[in-house]
Length: 137
Image (cartoon, rainbow, N blue to C red):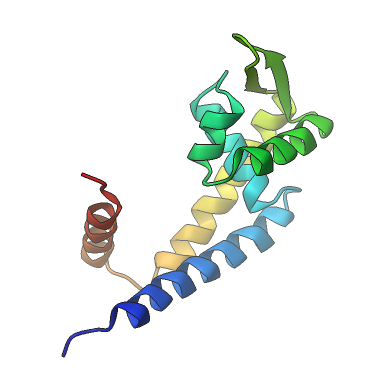
């Protein structure tokens, strides 16, 4: 029996929502949010990147990322420095590195718990299917 696209789409969204709620509540215990930790993670992967690039990496608008980056800078978790032209480069501070590391530990625990109902083979299949759906070619 074929599965309706809307039912499947809703199930994917529900799983993502549950995962995000779990991450957000546990990240609060280390003094950050999912959005902040995700931004720190993106900056760590691409030190010196522009707000435009980091917004794309974190699935946000440039304006939303700029607001978030301002909060991270006010918390001394990132430095924003002039780049080429009007571009602003983003870098982690030592406090940002510490928050990122704490977030990684939380995320590892949360995601292990979240995916625990699946076998290793089911996880591999899920990853393959999601990667296939995410391709734009």
